Amino acid sequence: MSYLQHPVSPGRPVRIGLIGAGWIGSFHAESVARRIPGARLDAIADPALPAVEALAGSLGVTRISSDAADVINDPDIDAVLVAAPARFHSGLIAAAARAGKDVFCEKPGGRTVAELDDALDAAGAAGVIVQFGFNRRYAADFAAARKLIDDGAVGTPQLLRSLTRDPGSAAGIADPERIPPGTIFLETLIHDFDTLNWLNPGAVPVRVHAVADALVAPEAKPGGLLDTAVVTITYSNGAIAVAEANFNALYGYDVRGEVFGSAGMVTAGGPQASSATSYTAAGIGAATVRLNVDLFHDAYTAELAHFVDAVKARRDGLEAPGTPGPGGTDARNALAVALAAALSARTGATVDVSSIAGLQAAEPRLHPVGKSA
Image (cartoon, rainbow, N blue to C red; front, side, top):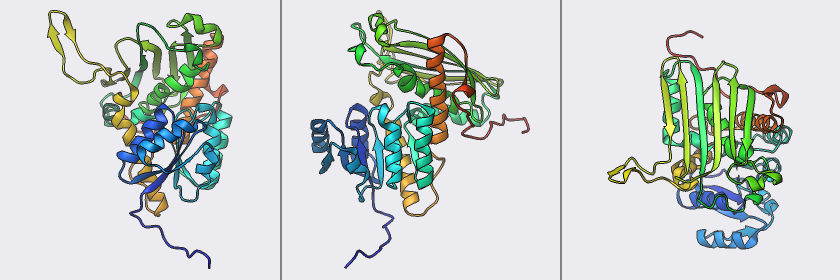
């Protein structure tokens, strides 16, 4: 006899397959397996099978593979979590979408806008959810800053700032030659570009100018390394933003944001591990965070929980809870700025973002309190 169709129980966990068992993939796997009650990690794939075996063993996952296609085509998998290297992201999104799987993908969504568009087209045709890993939106302080902006605390945004300084050491960057060219824009500052877009709702970036160099590891510059960058972005509403990054902050992992406007200013972030501060003869001191998974531990978990809730709602035919997570338009806008910044750094010229891609705002325009539309 053949199978009978039976509705899925609303209480059944969302079954997730992980593709990519590296640093961030392993952390996401632990989140799904141990910190998100509505989800279950069912399968893991990565070409590095020993890494898969170690991760699966620690989390009690029995289905493993060196081939991502095994996870994508598994009929028991509801959603795919893509944490593979960036060069595979768009292809994996498209393949998962064609298999009817919802997708959570780490940033960037692709290496080119055309590549990302193909993946988003596949997702749109399949009607699946695609959420991208812009975790700062889920950090409590950044979310609070955005709510203050929505409530009119800054009025009309005029100046914005976002920075990422990766933790470092006196020895400098370990193995700088292993960092692919363009990483500072496509994989580091892309978080800042999304944050700036998100903190300036309704506006789109129109012009970009970038200056970048290898100041931490100048010996690696001939191989394409850029480890320090400052990017200026002009928005369609006239706001001017600055994003900066460096790969070697000796004092810890430092991520901050700021929006200044006609009515005030909001800030978010910082490297402090807590608000506890010592005042001694040696000076004023505070403990700092050294890892991204520590600074954004709760944000990483919250973004996946949001994704799981959305997948469960789609599966069960219910209305998705709350605001949608960062999707295709957000990923596209951030990628366009990253590509424009990379081009500007190479040429020294200001780049019109329209030469990279035509953009649309991901959200309605901000209406400052006291002003009409």
